[in-house]
Length: 310
Image (cartoon, rainbow, N blue to C red):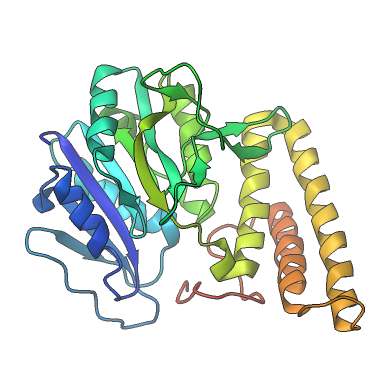
């Protein structure tokens, strides 16, 4: 695959990227075209061993998705290339998926960002055929396969776990917005791509597995989806979108606070920890949006695997 390079973002030292690298090689991408970026889970963590040919970049702390990906993107943009894959370590291409994605990009140079159709890992259940931004700024995944049989189905944004960019687009608009840390950065960069005159789409014949990770970090997930989501909504839809996002956040806080109280009093089954994490994360996200506090999340209930963020 001449002209194609890749950035793989990994977290910790478990070597979770191994099956992904295997799938890339099966699709014809040589390992010397791959940069692996390591976000350490604790200070002083030794970087993982990587296969011969791969380049390893290890951050001094957990930079999140945006900071980690930008490290790899900057390194790859120093080199010659046509197309750049950005992948999280849990992504997996199914047979023929990467080849179909690259072929579509070369057949349709007006598309600056492309993604595969995503299914939940180990199943055939659709996860995303691209994303849409509604009139009020709310983001939603397309769950049904697009009709019409076209090579590319246009959409507003691509899930950040598996994205294919044109080098010339990234050189024009830059990488991900580092303020976001993680979540909604994929929609934001696709919006900038559209404003730069490129199209965004998903290739239905290209399949890849994805494992959403929000449940592993419930408090930070609620915080970042609230803060970053409202920032993106304002960017895409102006004050109308921002008002809708804040209204939705207030409803989430009220509902989950009631759920936490009911569970704590034994009026409902289940632990109050989950709704409490959603309450605190969402509320703090709205507050920090107004304070313009960006970057990684603060200490929150249900932090899960969000560690060593500095």
